[in-house]
Image (cartoon, rainbow, N blue to C red; front, side, top):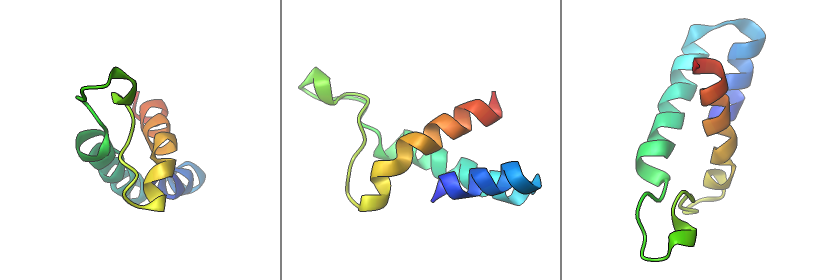
Length: 68
């Protein structure tokens, strides 16, 4: 969902869209990303609790590109 708001921000310049997308991206990075695991191959991956979480990598990339 955050990717859609980053796109809307890019199209319109509406900061409300950016603020919401930033909140979604930070939630993903802080809560849904695997930071520690006994198997190294899982570190840096995301939890796939819901189908929408599978697309969160795009949100992280958008956030990095747009926020500097």
